[in-house]
Each structure stands twice: as C-alpha cells, then as structure tokens.
Length: 80
Length: 428
Image 1: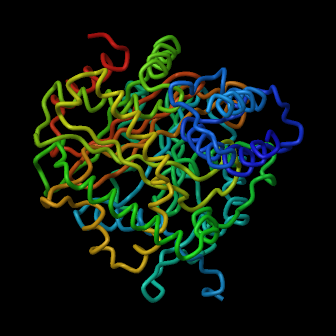
Image 2: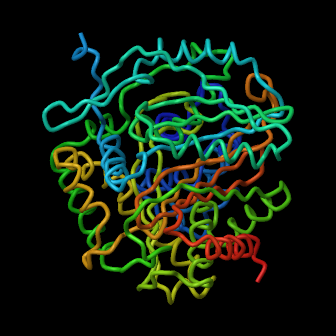
Image 3: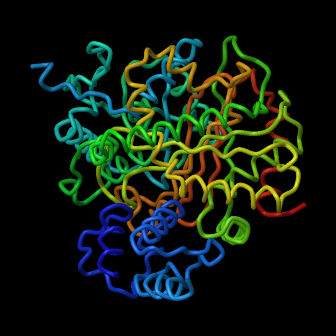
C-alpha cells in the first residue's frame, strides 16, 4: 500500500530529486503537499483501496506522512 | 526552418490566448502578467543579462512570436535576445511610490514582446520585474523562471512536454467524453447564478492600477490558522475567496445580482518541480455562492469547502481538460463568449483570482540579494475589471489587487480591501 501511495505522490503531486530517499515518517506537507494535492491523494486512495476517507478526518495526523496515511486508510477500511 | 521550430499552443495556452484577445480588443495591452521582487540591493545585472541569454538559448520559446497555423496557433522562436531594461527612480522622491509608478508605466505601455525583464533602481535597492504574456507561461512558470534566473544550477531546469497533453493522452475516447459531459453540465450550472460584479462599466479607455497589502509574519500566521479552522487542510485558497466574497457583499457590489462566481486555477505541475517552465498547465475550478450564503460566514465556508471537495470527488478538476482541448478549434471570439457569458448574457467572473502559493527566498535571496517584498499584477477583461493575486513570501502573505480605472471606483475598492483585511483576520 505504502509503495503505491508513494509512487502516486511523487509521480503526480510532489517533485523530489530522489523519492527513494523520502522516509515513511518524513513530512509530506513540508515536502509540498498542498490542499489540491491532498484531495487528489484522497481520491486516489479511495479508488485504489476501496475505502471511504471521511472529510472530517483530513488533518495532519492522518495525511502528514506515508505511515500516517497508511494507518488512516487501514483504520477506515476496518471500520466499514 | 521556422516551421520545424514552431511550438503549438497546448489547450490551456489557447484558453489564455482567447482572454488576451478579449483584453486587446477592448483597447488594453493584452493578457500580460507581472511578477515583481523588491530587492534590498542591486544584484549583479551583468550576471542577470547572461542568465537571460542562457534562457533564450536553452528555451527558444522565451523569445518567440505567435503565428496562426490553420485553425490553431503556435510560438515561433525568433532568437531575439531579451535585453534587461533599466529604469531609475527620480531622486528625492519616495522610492516605493516611484517604483510603483514605473511598474505601472511599464505595465500600461503597448507591448508586443511575450517576455520583458526590468530592473527599477531606487534607494539602496530596487525592483526586478518579469512582465510576460499569459499564453507563454502561467504564474507557477513565472516562479520557476525567477528560480532559473537566480539558480546556481541552471542546467537542472529542463523543458518537458505539456502536462495537459500528457494527461489527455492517458485517457481513451470514452473517458474523455464522460469528462467532457461532466464539465459541460458543471458549466451550465455555474452559468445559472448571475454574478455580482465590481463595476457596471463594460467599455471605454482604462488604465491598470494597483493596490498591494502585505501582512507581517504574525498576521500571516493568524490568517493561515483561521483558514485551517474554517476551510481545513484542503482549502487556504477557499478562505481567501470566501473572505473576498464577504468583503464585496458587505461593502455592496456595484453591479448587484444573485451571487458570486470566482474561477480559480489548479496547476498540474508537481509541487517544487523545476519543470515545465513554459506553457500553461492549469485546469479551472469555480467557487460559487449565493448572496444569502455569503452573508453568513460559517455557512459560506462550509459551503465552499463542501463544493470544492465534491468537485474533486466528481473529477471536475480534470474535466475541463477535454473541454479546453475541444475549445482549441473554436475561433477566439466564439470561445470567449462561451468562457465569459452566462445564460443571462452577463459576465461570469466576479473577480479574477490566482494564488501562487509559498516562495522562500530567505536562505539564498535573488542572486544573493535579500528579497524584501513581492508584487503581482495582471490585466483582466472588463468586466470584472478587478483581479486579486495572492502569494506568500518567506511566511508573509501579500495580496495584490490589479484594477481598471476608471471602471472600478477607487474609494469602493479601498473599502473592500479594508473589509477584506478584517475578514481575513476575523476582526468583525
């Protein structure tokens, strides 16, 4: 899951000279993930992993890093 | 030789070219945009000229003419050098006021070149101005261009194909058709709410004028926190737009109708990407609200956020790409009518808006010189005759208001700007 998220983020949303060096806990918001990027990322995750990510939970704790994103998606998947 | 070098417009280049034609047809210079940096000292102007020479060498499109090829248009490189134009503030005058006077003189003069670069010397420093024609590049491109001119590694900047064409190539015929129909429906809905406008004037000679509001770091942080509180992580732009709608509504719109419609762009470039430099790589979205919604701050922000999220969920952010692709085969006049007019025949846009996002110059400055401020400018159609360009430089929010005079009343605009400040800072 994390690999798919990472590939999408660095192919579509954020430019990084060496995406492989970007850590799972590194801050995506500091790396340039903006408001439109967050929405596009959520749409991608919902479609790719078949979950619904509630708008009310869009916050740094859930979208701030690859690990946070993965945890949020898994949690929402289990809650279905 | 010329034909081989021609670079065809991408769909978004043509979109902005159509608006450029509208502006020219109304007797104004055209769809020019300005990006000015205030510098604490004079940079090495010889080094800057060398970098401009490198720009033309590496990116021939930087110095080119527009030519029509059949039904479509293209940039044809000329190889003409871009000469840094130098200006001097009058001694003994206030340097900031003088600098703005010269900026506006440059911006109001008839122009045929797609990109000119200026150094306005005043006091101990001065202002560097990029003045470019919108079909050449969008605001994010302007930002990348400044980075190129100042970079220690100019070789890392490369041109790449149009992101819009790349996106369109990913979709099959049915996907394009599906998106086209979605966009058309959305457009019809947008056209159903008659927009309040900043002026009732639709023609006559106009001069472009400018008002700039720069917030300090503390105010900017407060605005960012309020934006997060009201429109969440996904909507700083929405906060600015909502505050502006409220400011205009509370002061009273000169052309009062049913609601507000403000188009805003989203950029297909990846954040922080040094490429593509040239071309427009934008899609279009609309923030719309009735006057009733605008009057209640909480209701307005909830509405704008939910509208934005629904638009992205419905893929309407991408749906305009097939629409713009088809628009390439329409004449500028016919396309402009579709872009600008509502069912009632009125102007769709209550305001032109763009948010260039954050820029950081603190570490390296521009060619090593500290950057103390920023001004953004653009020409727009009449109506609306008013554009708001937002950007953040080293953590300080700057709002630049370009407006057409005499169409937009200065006293009215001053009242709107004061109200906008209060709305942004939530000071009732």
